[in-house]
Length: 446
Ligand code: LLP
Image (cartoon, rainbow, N blue to C red; front, side, top):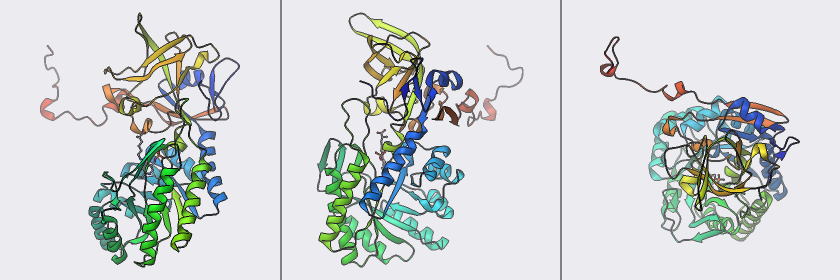
């Protein structure tokens, strides 16, 4: 059963409606493929994080992980909702700054931040950096010394817990490119460097244990390990810390089997564990920071496509092709991600067939959804795929030289364009033809 999120509903015409806007009308007005965001749901989820934290009585910070979906309008919304922002590149930072996002509420992540990116971020006066490795520590120490800045930094640690959906695994040492390893002593060494550094204001520690997590135990174990390090840094090494950042990873429902927890359940579990550990270890309860991406952007996004070709292979499978696919949503081909869909202009019609929804790109693997129950559709119908707000537009490409789709925010019957559709000319805007290859006037064309 397809579950409608937020303000999505079926209207009197039997059409899917989002934010009070008829999706069939949106498809006509803006074209397809089209990413439609339910603005009220985006805002509601931001508020859920605030509400959950307020109940814990802790000092807290919620930073939206902009890698999930980053545009200027999204940065505005996140700012209006009182969230901070996590960026991982000069591009995300530039998007935020040009949208007027307060630099002091931005922090920067990444396992290979370049000198240029660090310089840009320092010049902009961002709130802080999450330090990932010794190379970056040296680079940042050198730049801050030269530029006379003293930014706040968190140390990214790998606590040896990895969590995805219902499973989490504990390992002594985590085999990942990110962060300073706790088990091998790398983290201790980084801490000693930071306590001695005059130009870096070491304020806390960070970890991120995975994505699309449906249980709280992985977070709880990570908190225990992180707090032990935190207490050692404060009590033994005299570090002046105040922040424990436990990253993102809060799961969402893509298909019926997915059972994410309410936001408050994750936050309560984390907060309880932090309080208990602080008490046990004799340190003040730190501020707790989180960085949700998918949970905020994912459920609020729906992609609209126009149905085209149909191919029936008797006794084997029925394919329906749409006008988008792996370039606007690479998650199925990369992660075998699953989605639910309906025919938006036949939303009240009964399910009549199982169809495999194929993308339009020249790859056999370009399938959006395998064998999903749908109303019987005809070319020109609109297919709506749900839960596509996170890691779709932000991971989109121009594969097969297709323009990237437009994005709209729908709210109370009004749809505003927040990213215009690319044109064919946009596709060639960075192309150059070397002079020696330029076609000369009157050159014979064979
Ligand atoms: N903080 C850090 C340090 C992260 O690395 C990530 C995601 C987040 C926060 C946000 O995690 P979220 O709340 O969205 O789970 N492209 C993949 C997801 C990659 C996530 C990478 N890091 C996907 O489409 O599933």
